[in-house]
Image 1: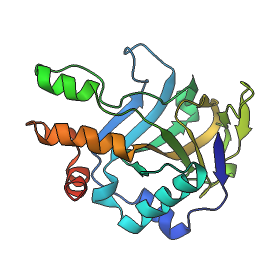
Image 2: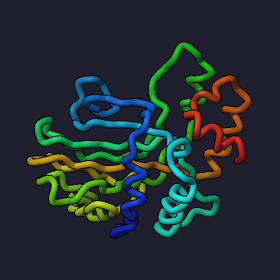
Image 3: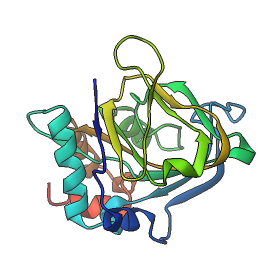
Image 4: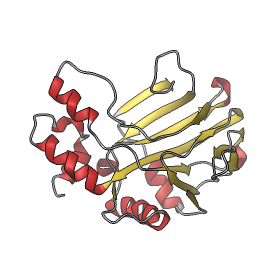
Length: 221
């Protein structure tokens, strides 16, 4: 299941996505979430807190599109930061065929309680990719998606276009052969599953699992 929204974001929206900011996390080259030698994803990844850096109206605009794609009784929540990913031709930028359905809070710590909370966090349910630059600025770098037949179907994303799909849908980015491709990546979880998990987190000493802006927003839920 997927839905494509052409020209969904205005130039003003895109400026807000691209504005200079203090990122939560930056990496010269992100090589996927497995072992360090995994080259399934070769891209610059800059992660930011949407509740800190964006107006709530813009987050609502994204949420409305998700509900229009796949309605869920309790709605959806942004549990994790958003990621601006840049694919350069000189790095061989790409993202191999994969799915997003996983628990964001990976890795172990020295605290068993914190590891328990990370392990029971809700998995991603919906995924989003937004084109941030003009399609004519790069060659290759095609976004590919399984539209239900198991094949790699191209979904051409121009600046301001957005595609929303189930997080267990296979997708990827073909190698960029010329220029640079930029995209905004967003994930959502089911709201009811998030609230149940949040209650356990709030009863612990580990509310730092949420970035500052996200944590402040969730205090009202």
